[in-house]
Amino acid sequence: MNPAIQQLQQQLAREPYDPALHYELGRCYLALNQATFAEAAFSTALALAPDHPQILMQLGNVASKLGNEVLAADYFKQSLQQDAQQADVHFNLANSLRKLGQQVTAIHHYQQALRFNPQDADVHNNLGNAYREAGQLDLAVAAYEQALKLNPQLIHAKVHWIHQKQHMADWSGLKQAIQEVRQALTQQPHAQIPPFAFLAMPDTMHVEQQQCASLWAQQHYGHIQPLPAPLARAKDRKIKLAYLSSDFRKHPLAYLVTDVIAAHDRQQFEVSLYSQAKDDDSIERKRFVAAADQWIDIDTLTDAEVATHMRAADIDYLIDLSGFTQNSRSGIAAYRPTRCHINWLGYPGSMGQLHDRPLFDVILVDGTLNQGQLAEKPVSLPCYQPNNSQRPMAEAGNRSQHGLPEHGFVFCSFNQSFKITEQVFASWMRILQQVPDSVLWLLACNPWATKNLQQAAQQSGIDPDRLVFAPRTDIASHIARQAHADLMLDTTPYNAHTTASDALWQGVPLLTVKGDTFPARVSASLLKYIDVPEGICPDWASLEKQAVLLATQPDMLQALKAKVQQQAMRLFDAQAFCRQLEQVYQTLI
Image 1: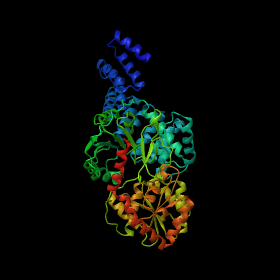
Image 2: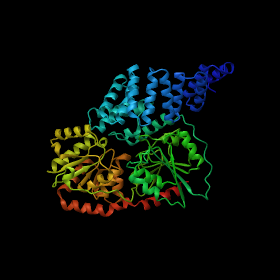
Image 3: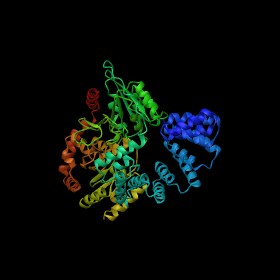
């Protein structure tokens, strides 16, 4: 037993009604990540000292640690009712509110925390996160810069700064900052580097990305004690699948995997969906609900409670479809609740190791993506990325309705702006220089990206009017309008995923550079599966040459379009994909 805990328990044997002793005992348990014991100690302290602000705060901390942010926020609010000038409680409340999607109120409480403690770099960083989530990217970047001014070693603030600058297509200072983050990965074991943002950084290597994932897993889930190993599976029952995601809603995931989940053979499989997603009342969410045998909302459950639920349900496979993305619940896997954990689709890379074993047992890949050196056991499918059998469609209209010239070549890239690197954009500008009267059709992601890309075009000698920005719209209209594009240009090191499938559905040829890392090979994976190797380029010089050739040789382009239109439908056979996936499930346990 911990000596401090032992001493406190001895004192409590003599003074059982001293709230201060119970409070200190709770703090000791919390420091040891024993949240359940901490909760009991703080609850006893509160019973002996009702409305004590510090005890209420600690109960909020415990609730947050256990994943119950609703309860945590309630405790923090009660604490502030007793003392409204507690900077740390304002900070903690803001953190919980952010996780609950209440960004505007969270911003208010971060600002209140800074009112009482303006030199706290962590508060500035988290304020930046709230601004980012509220779509105020310029204020987010300013907040991160203030955090780094106060604490230059706050690496996660630097990572956030980099990622938001990428979203804004503002590449100034990124190269040096990325190098500093890469150095911190090996030199600062306590540096918190969000793995998803690291994936999108140019020049990061496969081994670094896996190291980043392992570091993140250890920092966030290292305190978790796994459940005892499950009993052997009874062979005379259905295989039980638990798909886990924060994106069972109106999200690109819905256009990839809903039909596959619905297609499972219910004579052999029982399908549960564990959803972290808020109910957005969308058709996409309703289709997910209809595809499940059991639908479990886990938004108000802790990771431990979800793991216990899975174990009680005797689940065979936990398939995480979100990974280290926003609102991830991947910590559930640290409890080892099921017989096999699978990393698939939502996070394009390894999720690393925890306690000297992979956090996930298996990663689903294909021949293009299987590079070895993955923490998980790679298991290959014919194609990594599934797709629904149909895409929602609307009327395409004519070119002028989309701001496009009626004549002239239309290059497109509807990837999010954070994927557009300085190198990629420079390559696109060289292509435009060689193809007169051509335009580049991009997604209007945010006003800062639009302005910065226009300025970058001007600096490259390209009229900014040759960049056409497509406003965000519903998915049916978005897919339909792509019929007006002649050729899609991919990004690297983070490729198109659903966006590539959308283009191929419309018969739009795609050019990509096959990179070295997992997210830099996804488009090549799709093109290889439909047997269109002409779209896979070894480097950017080759891509530029191929793009110019296709744009200036109409017969060559039409032949490629015809090939894509004929062969792309292989990507959209959800029934066939499901049968291949089921074969994997039948062989792993």
